[in-house]
Image (cartoon, rainbow, N blue to C red; front, side):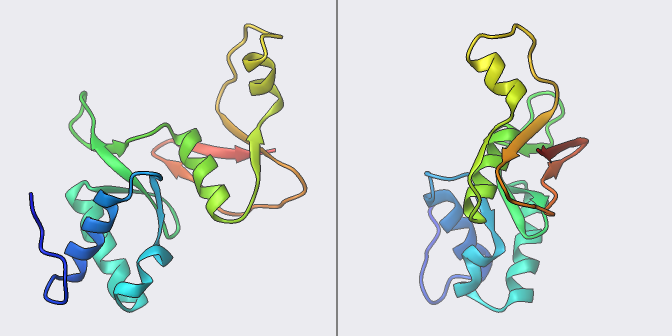
Length: 140
């Protein structure tokens, strides 16, 4: 679908077009669209895009690209939640790493698959909650 992007395009259309054109990341922050309008207006348009299934909200002011679930037909993140956590924390200025259990599994020291989504952050205290549905990113 071709959407005209210019001065006459709506804020929703301009945000949607930027999301479609951005291929190097799957996580978006409300601040990414601040050049399109006021804080409240951008937030309202992002909520509409969440309702349309183009995005899913994974945290306060934090959105991820969405796709339709083959099982339920509802919007779900297009990448795993752990990858969303890594991308979001990098965007927020942190340097996330796999937790110890994940490193042991990746390096072949154990056959036990790590349970849950845990990210290691060295020396940083993060209060931001990144979640989708019942799954929540934990920090260690």
